[in-house]
Image (cartoon, rainbow, N blue to C red; front, side, top):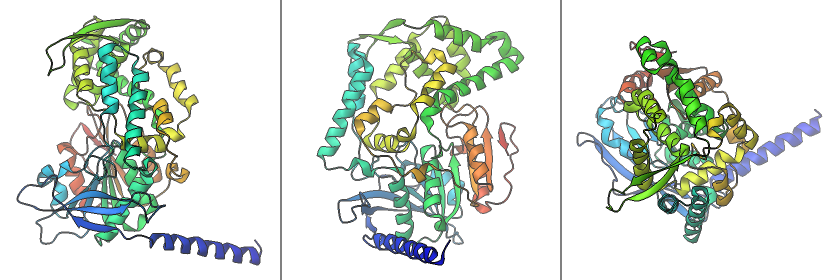
Length: 484
């Protein structure tokens, strides 16, 4: 490279850095005390406040938003100065309720704990919540209308409502949420943070590390969904891998093999045979006495199985449930599935904005369709494993996040990774991929568990040990929790 070119390059880099620095100075994050949505046990001191930042950092003088957070202080007089910051998954899940159990967790023993509500979620101002999609789906079930078209109508209504409120839907994405966490760190004058994320927020915490590495001591990621994974290209395979894990256990156990022999083949044959078939069930909403005749198909049976895979206590029942379904005994399961539908408000606007800009914007339709070639019984089922899908995103109309956000990166920061072997969403493979890029990571595989095992009681001791020395080898004495 010529000297003149080098000089131009240096000047260009200096200008970019200066411009970025100037942009950062265009707003100052603020802290404002607020009532506590939740409080920790009375033995611990709780402080609650809002972080106030621009809704859209590209318009720093425009509208601001308020993001609540809760600081729970450790009683240890010798506590460390690197708190744990937690935010929930989803995207769209709340984050503050965890403080009610923090007194029973190892994370509070030697450091403070911060629960941070992401922009657009339940306790944030504004919240992008709404029941438009949930109500549209209920109407479809009640009247046996096409569910897909009703969901799209609900999506359009929710979008119109939020836009009428002056909300910039494009500002609710992973990049902005990562910047919120960095702004909170700086506003609270914290030099070093341990980031704790689950599912979607596992990928969010990796984005914080990527964009703002200087302030991060360690990551705790429970069933993480990395940003470099396009989940829509994998979710059908992930669901079937979780089922296959159960089928293999049935075949490998002599008693189960006698009871459920060839369960995978029976399952596949039966669900393939349901192509084009519909059934009906008499269903009454719990608050209403008048029963309805509701049509259902293979789609709702798959939906019930998916929901059950997330319930740790019910995973062991799945072979019996599948056997029951094969014998034509659907009604008890369909009624439970309908209970969940009729008591759900559907995906929030925040979930749609994040998911559509982050996941679906980069998903390749060809890859999505290839999954059905491997699992043809799902092709005609008309069931979406995710409650946000391509047609909804076409209605939602938000731009994609920066492509750099979707790129894998290397880091020496220590990471604790947890996964359940029957997780239908975020497979243990994702932790293996993260480990490749983050060699100071350590993995825990929880057998006979599903999504989010590390955050539960079984994972707490590992979190405590990891926080004390993130580079020390994690050891498990439990046969059903494998450290590697």
